[in-house]
Length: 57
Image (cartoon, rainbow, N blue to C red; front, side, top):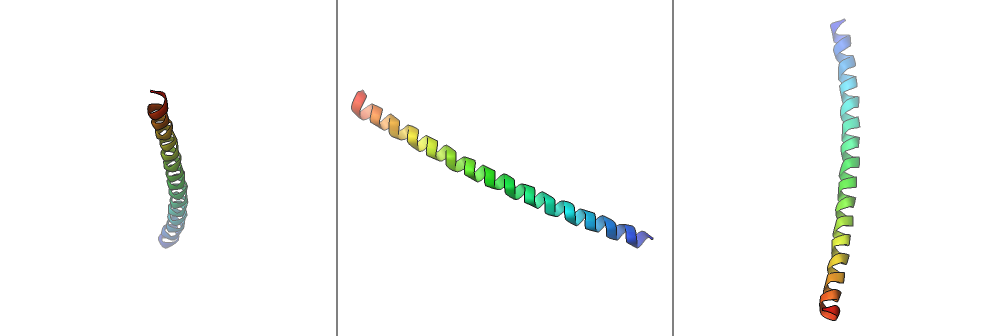
């Protein structure tokens, strides 16, 4: 009886670990896409700043 319960717990644990890995991968993808978005916005702001400094001031 004890072996059956240990086996059931192991299957549940494996399912939980696989679910956690999937969630971590989704989180990693969202972080990396947000990082690229921030870099693009920063680059555009720098370009506008350069234009302002060279042509307006």
